[in-house]
Length: 125
Ligand code: 5GP
Image (cartoon, rainbow, N blue to C red; front, side, top):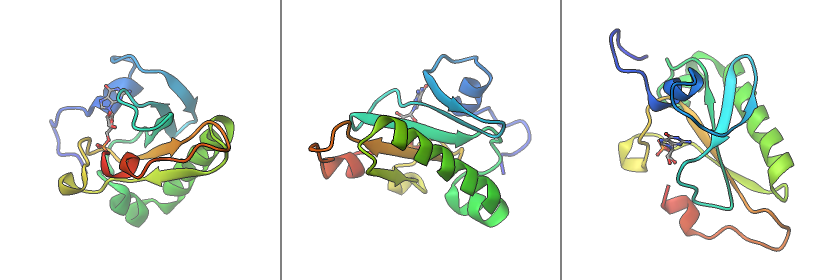
């Protein structure tokens, strides 16, 4: 959980419309926007509006229903924007590449049926 007085995350500032982003999906509790530094032809960040969960492990333990909603939004985005096959990546911990400690998934995909994701699109996240 974020400590009292902690700075809002960059994602909370996007949710508050204080920082611009290209929002591609929004529900009552989930929001999705294009990653500012895409690592694949399709690269969308899907996050909870509630910033209290720092990573997917916390979200799964404390609110599995909300995790299910996040995954459902990710699947909908992938259905709309990719060839239907995609990666869903939750970096967990700084050593794993997590830089924003506000739970989020990366939807990574290609746009056409013949295109494959490179191996590096996972490692570079
Ligand atoms: P992480 O490294 O924590 O798994 O993922 C954070 C992601 O947020 C990165 O892929 C990074 O490019 C993205 N990101 C960071 N700041 C911004 C921003 O201001 N706008 C958008 N759209 N994406 C951001």
